[in-house]
Image 1 (cartoon, rainbow, N blue to C red):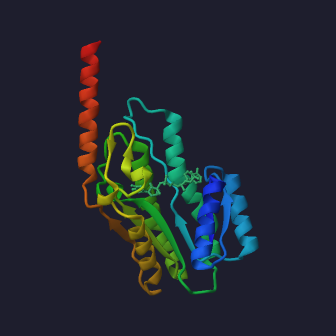
Image 2: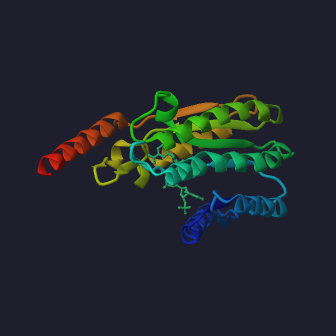
Image 3: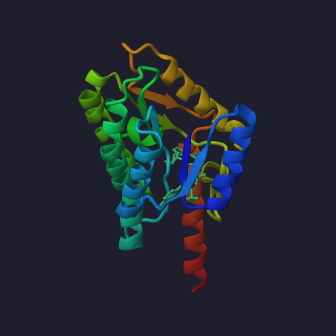
Length: 237
Ligand SMILES: NC(=O)c1ccc[n+]([C@@H]2O[C@H](COP(=O)([O-])OP(=O)(O)OC[C@H]3O[C@@H](n4cnc5c(N)ncnc54)[C@H](OP(=O)(O)O)[C@@H]3O)[C@@H](O)[C@H]2O)c1
């Protein structure tokens, strides 16, 4: 198993936990997926160490909320590149290593998208680059499924709603959601297990997981609070 992210300390901690629980070999490499050179050198390392690959999970993602009226072009670009462009490049480089793998134990590319982006193609407020990146991932995933099907590689888009972690529970200074009512990290692991356990002849192309609370309510509360703050501020000016 190979773990990739920027924070080497966190990676090593998780690698140790996985190794001691499952007694498997875990490598980790600090990489900024926005850098094409980093990505290429990690793919070369994989090729030299293993020769092939079975499963790729495209998980990295960032979110920066702001109305298009106030957004910073550089940040929009970073969100699109981290959430979409970098994954497209990784999949491009890694697909041949998976497709040419002679071992038919599960071969898969799992793309971590967003449920709200794929269900509600009409978008959501103050979240343009994030949703645009997830729409793009969904289209990309649907297309590469066809390209890789003949090689028995499953391509699955896993669209989750809010998850019980920092990205899911903390909505900046305005809103926090109780993690108990959201999707648990284990639920996502079960979905990945399900994808990998399906027979070679079937592929769960899209899986959507919804949390018990409706994120739209959360967003509505958020916007009501922002609006009332703006009214209060304008009165005090
Ligand atoms: N949490 C939710 O409620 C929720 C809902 C729907 C979809 N999702 C999606 O689920 C995925 C995982 O999100 P999460 O909630 O687990 O968020 P998270 O805890 O913030 O994890 C994001 C991961 O991406 C890595 N990452 C970010 N930028 C990177 C870069 N430039 N290069 C390499 N690695 C990078 C981070 O590691 P480093 O910082 O160490 O690089 C971290 O491991 C994302 O694609 C997100 O859009 C999450």
